[in-house]
Image (cartoon, rainbow, N blue to C red; front, side, top):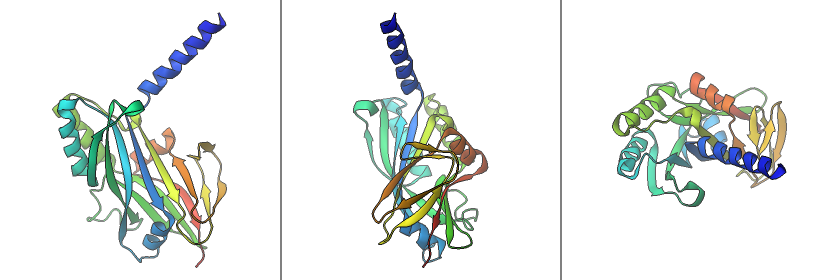
Length: 225
């Protein structure tokens, strides 16, 4: 009886893994880029990332590639996945890092995804993820119209690797995310040492909030020059 229960639990777990995620975004974000955009030294910067998307079928993969190229910066290295990602196609891309005060201007209004930075008082700088729901919906609608393959933002996960590329440690406050695999519900302070990194994953609530409201904050840096 015990073995049957274990087998059933394993089957349910496998089904969750198979049905839970049609796509994944993985992006790098650098502390120095956040600071340079926040203080106006750079109007914007591009940071690298990779997207994994369930294949609509080999004959429709060029259509998917074209849609990615229309909606993201510098899409390249489009390829088939292998192993656990054998059912997915993969592409490298760039995502802009923008000042919060400029992302709704005409120049940036058509961005599909971006990182936002917002200077605050007392040496604090907030950073977050912007998702353009209208462009995302239009991209998925075009894919469905041409391939009969449907995707939803609610089937995607968003992951960010925050790199401290300063020559010193920096405090970062997180809340409402997964940080290094740990759920952070209430505000917590993490001290990022020089060359340290942390892995940030948006939960469903944070992802859906970014999609519905346009952006969600991921954390706050504390930096004094």
